[in-house]
Image (cartoon, rainbow, N blue to C red; front, side, top):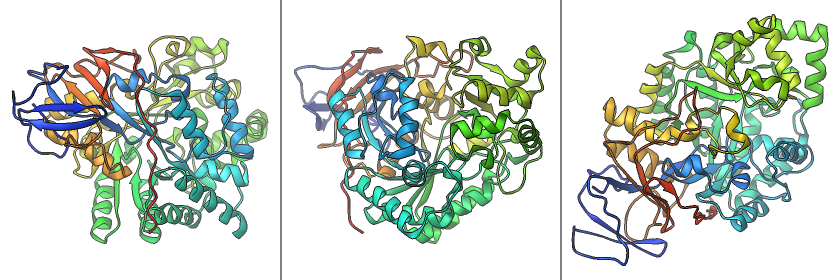
Amino acid sequence: MLVDGTGAPATPMDLAIDGTRIAAIYKRGEAKGLMSIDAQGKIVCPGFIDIHSHSDLHLLANPLAESKIMQGVTTELVGNCGSSAAPIMGTAKTALEEYANDMCVNVNWTTVDEYLLRLNNLRTSVNVCTLVGAETVRKSVLGDDNVQPSVEKLDRMRSLVAEGMLQGAFGVSSGLIYAPGCYATTEELIALASTAASFGGMYASHIRGEGRTLVKAVAEAIRIGRESHVRVEISHHKACGPENWGKVRETLDMIVKAREEGIDVAFDVYPYTASSTSLDSILPPWVREGGKEAVISRLRDPEMRARIIKELETPSEDWEAIAAETDWDNITLVNFKNEENKKFENRSVLKIAAETGKKPAELALDMICDEKLRVSAIFHEINEDDVLRVISNPLSVIGSDGCAEKPYGPDSESAVHPRAYGTFPRVLRRYAIDQSAFSIEEAVRKMTSMPAERIGLEDRGVLAKGMAADVVVFDPTRVCDRATFQNSHMYPEGINHVIVNGDMTVENGVHTKERNGLVLRHRPTIV
């Protein structure tokens, strides 16, 4: 049964591939090929497009991209949440080099073009395209301080975005809960988004708040779209913390009304009730100013630490405390680097605090210091009803918010959010098949042609003659995610075959080790 990605009903057809392209779609039995796949009882659809990925460096360390390709992902859009691998200079380059060192990746590039050439020369199992991170640009020009750019420096930031767009980036992204991205004014973001829009690019945003300030943050994203005339993609839309559950009703209405005004705004979502990011994101913005050493110094100062803990427990209205939106028992720590702390892997802050005799807030700050800001956390803070409401909305597309992982080697010893392995099969099984929130055809559309259109990928996301031969064959009776929060490095079931640019990359559920993915570059359209 062929599901072409447009939302049209499944149809019994034969699909022919010639080289890297789809040659034709035939009625059954009308044509034969040199090689054939018997997809009787299966669904054949376009390769899934992960519109929200953080595999920027992971693909250089792990070009086989196992956790993505095994769930049917054939294309990843990296450079999300304000952080991209390029362009990098100054503080941005130093920070990326330190992060890459843990992954044994040599950062030998500066520009978007050089980064994409590095990926192209390496060859990956998935196609890759990138955004320019607004935070990365800010760090390159302004460093880590809470300062506002002069006219000249803002022009330099806009130039970096423009250069990135000319070299193949598909737009600009922001991460407004992270430092120094959180120091950017709305006007600064409008300037950068306008630059991306002038080349036909998009603006993807991890908005300024997803809890108490969610409505205000969505309003800011809409304003950026209105004033910059950019295509806006709100990243991983959700409402965090019990007190905020249900607010997505209001934000979804806001988005619909904005579209009625002519503002092109939509959103992506992952099918889980937990988020994940670095633990230091719980800190007030003033604590994170000036870079890693400055942050650690403040955390170790008794007076400042007392102030920080007080603000964590009673945050002000001008910033959103992630830790205040949920209970410490719902914050699980993962990916420790310090050997002494690895015994606490995948356990909650509350449980670790009880074992060590510390108060939870003190324990969290100690871990941030011990791990030099590199420890991650999984926050169980989202309501399933909200997930269902957002994911079933006609405007939603699917993004994992995860990295390309592998279930072997040193990295597999740390837990990850299961979205890295299970996002796309989970949408099919849990929401399309089991809950009938939408049809399989609509689920496929949310994972193929819709993200392709949002990103600007003209030859992917639909099965039609002349389109790129990125194809998934899955069994609707078996497809499901297997990765859990307790056992996260688990491949899904029911993804039988994955073809990337005409090359069999997963065959009968086994990775063939082929690396036929392409670097996809945006062709700027001057607006």
